[in-house]
Length: 317
Image 1 (cartoon, rainbow, N blue to C red):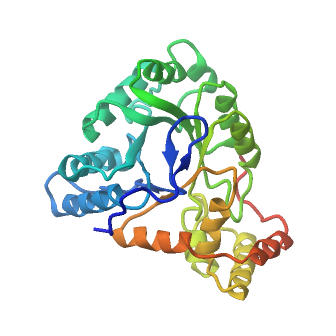
Image 2 (tube, rainbow, N blue to C red; image 1 turned 180 degrees about the vertical axis):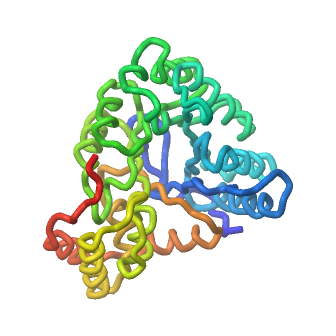
């Protein structure tokens, strides 16, 4: 287990929700993937979940459909077995029906109830509406739609705050524009190589919303480097993007840091971002993230980054 910290590092207000978050939130997209109840893989996953719940950061982020429900199940086992250190909480998301794609008011309620059962809790501090791509915005906003379901859970005191978590910026702006949500979670669109979510984030901050920025490494490229040819935002990285990242790597070397450090600090340094969500797959990664977080990045690096110009983003929306 990672060394336990009595209180979360650098707790800060999450918008106007009254909740607090550390600069880093731990993501659990793959936690428990491929495991079954009582097998060795589950035991290893529970150990990782326990390390998260007793680690340095306030929030652990999961979702109803992560690892086909196993992420929440494993976190629930860790909570029942060892609890959570003071100031640590699990936040989750409601998802569409995995078989039918239905994502209405009733599905929101069922998804919430499934999550509570897996986690072994009766209420959740923060609940996101996650990737509402199987319905149109108009359907989600209509009576009996997903937004109504989210608001009902909040009104009933079953959640403290509700958020919208997705990628497509144009769609996210419509959800933010309803004024219904307390928190925004965007991913892959505010990084070293893509700034397309900036207007969305600024809008959310002006409304007093909390902001999570997920996938600061773009799903691989900004963690592994240009030579790896890794994907960015689930898509192949074109040559012009790899070339641009190679220029950033050269700049990093000149300033005594590495690419992952620059990528994480790009998000950490922004006053618009309350917490940066980073997925982890091993207990050692927690200590590594804390080492990166506390690494000093010379101000001249950011000047040099600005001089590189606009990065060749691969994301159209």
